[in-house]
Each structure stands twice: as structure tokens, then as C-alpha cells.
Amino acid sequence: MSSEETEETLTCLRITLHHPEQKEKQVFRDLSFCENQRMRVDDVVKFGRDVNVCHFTLTDKRVSRIQFALQFFKPFNRSEFGFEIKNLSKKTDLIVNNIELSYLNKVDLPERCIICFGEYQILMEKQGGQSKDYFEICFELASTSLLLENLSFHQPVPESGISYTESPTETDEND
Amino acid sequence: MSSEETEETLTCLRITLHHPEQKEKQVFRDLSFCENQRMRVDDVVKFGRDVNVCHFTLTDKRVSRIQFALQFFKPFNRSEFGFEIKNLSKKTDLIVNNIELSYLNKVDLPERCIICFGEYQILMEKQGGQSKDYFEICFELASTSLLLENLSFHQPVPESGISYTESPTETDEND
Image 1 (cartoon, rainbow over the protein chains, first blue to last red):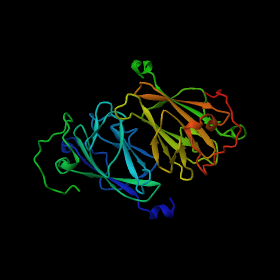
Image 2 (cartoon, rainbow over the protein chains, first blue to last red):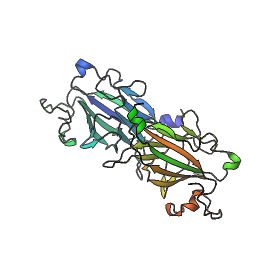
Image 3 (spheres, one colour):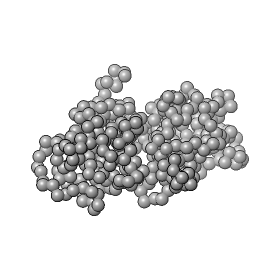
Image 4 (tube, rainbow over the protein chains, first blue to last red):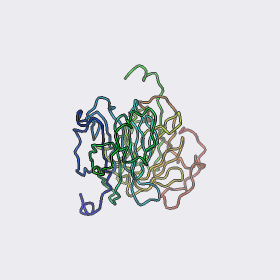
């Protein structure tokens, strides 16, 4: 790595994860939390059940072999980099804010968005950086529902399998 | 592979390649021509100089380690699948019809398009298919310039390094 690269800030995607049964099932046991994990910009970062294919694995038989993939890119005429998400699950739609992605659909991620599939809730927040060689991913864990804290990001979607019956919380301890 | 998959037709990307010095330099020597090569839909297909990273290598020191990448996807509300191209070369723009892609820019490929970088000319043509598991790539070699045959696809772009001085041809032997 050149010294030039080490001085540049890296675009970081902060990924806050919530699953209502994380305590019992430990579906996030294979992820490292609160640690910036460096990726190459030409990596396609796959999330899913299959440890042989995915960078980040979810330990849950209900998750697809590859659930979704993220890639880094540069939007036209913009100085900031961005991320694209693609649904790679045949059985489960991926909901990005209020857009439903079927199998192989893709969309550019907003700066901050809530992503849902099955019982999983994921808040993705981008922090800008300059590096053209690497970006970072940093995971955090949310013990309470992200939907209730971020209602403005999410319209209820019928049959998404998401529970809206939890009691409201006003904590911001998951930020 | 299930019997269902073998009966489905596969989306095929026909890639016709031209380099003015192919005869002398054999820049395409590592590619297999006129043969359908099957890819998984979650593969990101990289083209470039680096044999350790790229599915398809161009034997040319002027080509970047990774020049560009293709990925398969399904556009919203469309029955046909499509391809996205991303420029992964820091030093050379990638021109898709008349759109210039800088490093890390991406664009969805039209059904038929001319792609240029340096002295390379590439015609990409999609043939629709149903398979959700695989697609195919098939290479063909063009001995004459693709730009002169496909002028409607391409507006001259200053300083792209492309020569417009070759004598016109009316052959269609490369289709």
C-alpha cells in the first residue's frame, strides 16, 4: 500500500443490523462488530449463508446461499462514491426503503437507508471518503427494532414478514 | 444442474472484438472464440491484463490490470435480463456508444452497443434468454474496424485514441 493511500480517507458504509431473535439464534455470530473492515473497490461484497462465497455470512438456515451483494462505484458527475445493492435471493424480496427488489434487481443505495428481508432489518449509512482503491465496512448491532426509530425511511409493506407490534422505543443507543 | 436449467435458454452476450494490431500483437490470444462460455449470474466478469483476477485476459501491457467488469441483472418491470458495465481502469476512459465512463462509473448496456477504450473496439449484442442461473458469453473476432460498420452507434469522441482514417468497408463477414 502506498503512503498516498494511507493518508486518504476511505468511504465507509456503516451497517447496523437487527434480528428479533439474535439473542437466541446468534445469526450474526460470524461478523466482527465495531471494526472498520477494508475492501478493494473492485470487490463485490456478498452477504448470505454460504461461507465459501460470501464475505459476510449470516448463520441462519432461512437465509439464502447468497442473499445480496454490494458494489462500490462512482456516480456520473458526482465527487462522492456510492454503493449499489443487488438482490441475489430467489425466495425473498429485498426492500430498500420502500423499493422492493426481486431476484437480480439492483438499485443505487441512498446515503442512508433501511433494508429489510425476512425478519432482518439493516440500516446502511454512508460516510464519504476520497480513496479510489479501498472502502470500508463497519458493522454495529442494534438490540431494538430499527423500523420504529426510522419510520420516516419506511412505509409498511404488506406480507414482508416484518413485525410492527413491538413497543416503541426512543433510544438512540444503537447509533 | 437441474433438468429444468438445461432446458431453459440462456441470455447470451455476443462480444465481437477488434484491435487494429491483432495480427502482429495477438492481444486476444487467451480468449476462446465462437464458443458459448457459461457464467453464473452472480459472477462479476472481469476483463483486463491480470490473469489472476480476470475471467478474460487481454495480452497487452497497455491494458489495465482490470479494464472493466460486466454483471448480469434484471431491470425493474422487465421480463428480459440485462448487463451492467463498470470501468475499472484509472488511466483509460471506457466509451459505451457515446457515453464516457471514467474510473468506477457504471452504466446499463443497451441491447447492442459499441464499446471503445484505447485502440480496442468491442461490439456487444444481447440475445435474450430465460435462465435465472446462468448466462453465456461468446466471443467473435473482427478483422476490420467495427466503428465504420456501426457509425449510427458512435459519435466521434475527441482524444479517444481511435483512428477514423481506415478505408471504409462494406463487408458483413464479422456478424
